[in-house]
Length: 302
Image (tube, rainbow, N blue to C red; front, side, top):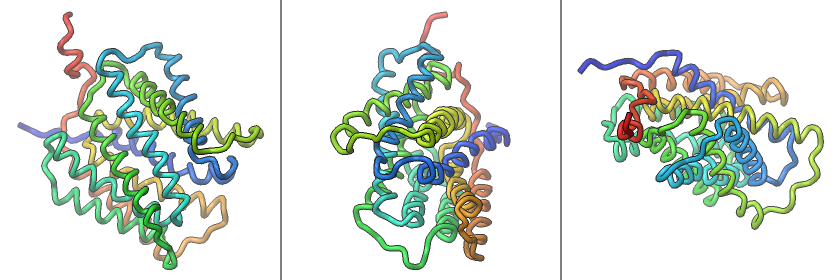
């Protein structure tokens, strides 16, 4: 069978999501109060999910209730919780480097759940990407905290499994509804955790509201709409490698907005990350999945 190459437009549109995610640290530190990571994650997910649900006006049916909560937990609740634990207990560079293992985990899980062969080129791209992220954000005096490292690894595995299962479970609805289900489910799962483990959120200021609006509408609803669209069209391992674009955005924003300097090693890391992303896209040769190819839709009578 002749293999089809994924259109460049799908790669660029999907890559826009992690590029925007790279602004999360800058927005969080500049516009939101410190010490409320789980509350911020909850407020980022649930309002955005409910807004999208109000637009699509379609709830899950049958097995999709279970799948929506599994994916919402993997892609949002557990991933964001572990991400914040890692970020609080590790220097930013260490946390980003640990999280950069995600594309390699996706390659392994794609073999298990999707039957995809493990390609040496894809593994090489993942290793090059990790090296580039380390050069970009890791400092020589970075300290390691076992709990922080464990949380970072757990978050990477969670997001990797969510990425693979999102490709495996093709939804019988539009991408907008699919995103709404996951965001809402993720927010619901975070609610009791926030109530049990964090103090009450202070009265929001105008800057807080602006920051949360950006993280919810742009950093969650819009970007995950693009992300889940991309996962239906390109290989999970190639999509995961686009996550390397987040540290690039974070570094550039730190340079522009926070007055941070760029060293020669960081510039080399910048180039290495871009080379890794390009290399990983060379592994893509899968036919895009059309919405009407869903097993659930195929089983319905005309």
